[in-house]
Image (cartoon, rainbow, N blue to C red; front, side):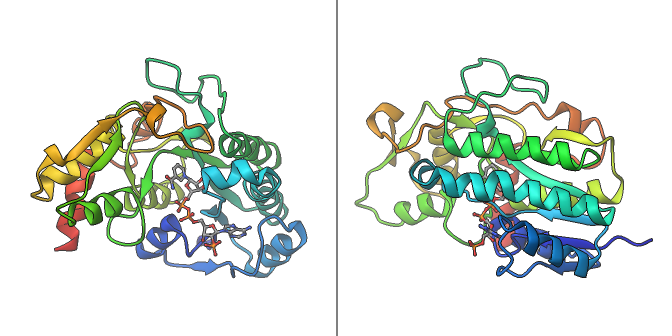
Length: 282
Ligand SMILES: NC(=O)c1ccc[n+]([C@@H]2O[C@H](COP(=O)([O-])OP(=O)(O)OC[C@H]3O[C@@H](n4cnc5c(N)ncnc54)[C@H](OP(=O)(O)O)[C@@H]3O)[C@@H](O)[C@H]2O)c1
């Protein structure tokens, strides 16, 4: 049987990258299907008869999730659970995307899939509970944890915001030095998802992101340097000077050895990935 993919969250950063990767047989779940609505998800799935459900849908507003935990739980917890149940009911497998925010960021070493999760935000808690529902309802599925996802070429994301500020010569650009993650392009994650569906490894949880960790400050300096701007314009600050509504984990470097060992695709460093994004822009 050839694979048919039912994609939720097609209009988001990752969803658009997945569509750009050109999956041969993909059904786009209409946005009118709310993943928090179990019945709507089931009906949509039965109609599409997929072999795979890919969940790129989520509530990704970390501060918004803190203010509206019931919505975060509906979309990030019950939503993936509904998709996993629907997948199970039609004999499909699921690829679900999760986040580095399931960890507290207090460890000084990189996090493996076996490390204890301890989210510090409602967003992270809602995503972790979503992972649990996916593995309960669809144990043959894949949970891919990624970090600091950005679609380089379009939209509003960290690099485009920094570049916009750099274009204003009078602008002081303050960026935090004490929040560390793995900047990851949506195109890399999309490529990983496509490769995984083409040659599925053992089911379970995998960390998939660009190699090497960076602080937001490191990332901004690189963006300035590669873009031909003066990196000295990026001013280091601490997160204590820039409080946010919800906490972010301080230092999460995802160890992707388990995924790398599948041999599916090569994971570039975040610096390589950023240069590739710029090269693709022409
Ligand atoms: N962004 C990051 O830095 C980051 C980091 C680590 C992990 N992740 C994870 O990566 C995945 C993809 O993130 P992303 O940045 O591509 O997200 P995104 O750009 O915010 O897109 C989210 C998508 O989900 C849709 N959506 C939201 N609520 C929905 C609902 N109730 N029912 C159906 N669709 C709904 C959105 O549609 P509307 O726009 O129409 O609402 C949008 O298409 C998520 O699982 C996220 O948790 C993201």
